Image (tube, rainbow, N blue to C red):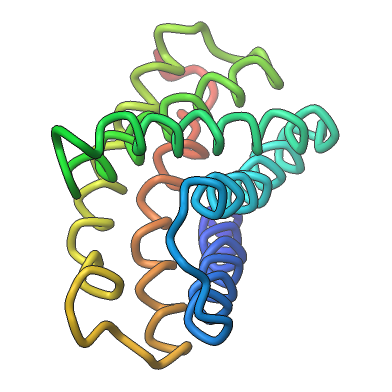
Length: 171
């Protein structure tokens, strides 16, 4: 599961860089900025999936599309769900990345990929909820090191669920 941990740390670095840029440049939260942020995050997530499947180019194309889809879902659900929309979008992106992984390596069927994506969504969703105070509370976490650790904590369960393989011969 070293690859899951390294992927989580790499994605956490991307997210922490984004957080720092949002704060330092005083970027206003607009839909276009949120879509760009989601696309960048999911480019990194897609590359993690694609490099592991030895097909980084299609994953690099699909990743931002998944990011824009998840971010659009967030913005469409925001009026009725508020911050709950973030968790719905978070769950959707893990399921879509599980499907992407299934399409890239073809070692499991779609039903297994959906189960894997659901496990990634739930476990990472719980972790995401536990760290959500880094950007929702009034005094947010300002330390980039603490943000990096928080984001890595949120991503590890998703990557573990996505990348965990059953030993050969186990049904």
